[in-house]
Length: 359
Image 1: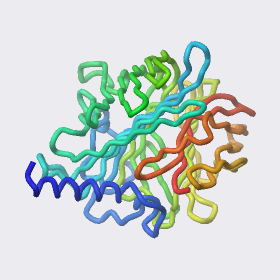
Image 2: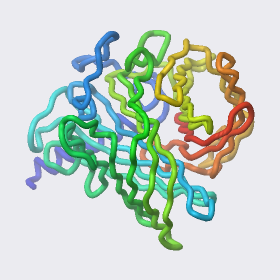
Image 3: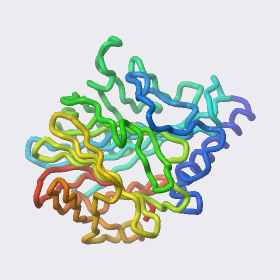
Image 4: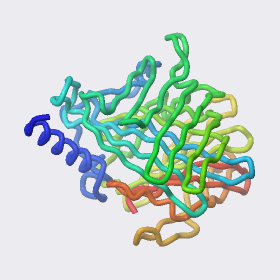
């Protein structure tokens, strides 16, 4: 690699950190409210295309493949796992080699009742270090992988996948099988994020059953459980005054699922909710339907983080309170945030994941 390539790569990594990092500003949390000039912008009424949309969309500025898993060992000990690949474009389009404007970041985490293990990777596009292919589906950064275990164009590449990642003190190798369909969030995959109309394309696979192994400092553990994959891409997903979000993915013991988030703006915020039947039929609910109330906070990384919540959805007679597996599930990455497994009880019971940014 010559000096010019080194400088180009360093500059891209710094811009990637700026794209995902930092604190809330006049450009929205992590710069996600920055004007999308020159990039493609999501439009309503566009049908998503599978399996093409499992791959990357280089004309959009930001994109992610984001998986969380609620796991248990044979003795009932609970764990959480996260695998995420982010793509950020310095300019629209793709080129080969070091001239590629695409840069990548990976996050991997494992949560126990007492520990939060976290690792982060950065990569430049165009040279094979990181990327995503739609068919056969594969997403990777260095030796971290999310890849399809099925072959042929007639099968959904996300129906059976394997994920692998490792950090300094943890490693996991999991196989996931979808027991339900892909779910379109928002209006047929067009997910509005603000009253001003910012939006993303967004779909999920919330019906994974999981089996595999975790490797921790104390040894190897066989686990089973449930997982949820989110796919999302946009160029300006937030309004400039939105300072962060509280996002929930819930597996109800009834077999139903719920995705809900609140984007904070200094006022009442903007909420979005999808109720998903046990058979996989999504019902998007109007903004303001979901009510989220913090019940308790923990002092984490010098910040007060709301780690217990009441979630109310009157139209579904849902009134639950959440409990974090680990109240200090802090992602000490370049863009720090709280993320970890939760359980809930009340009108409904089950498990899920909570992500909170901008605190």
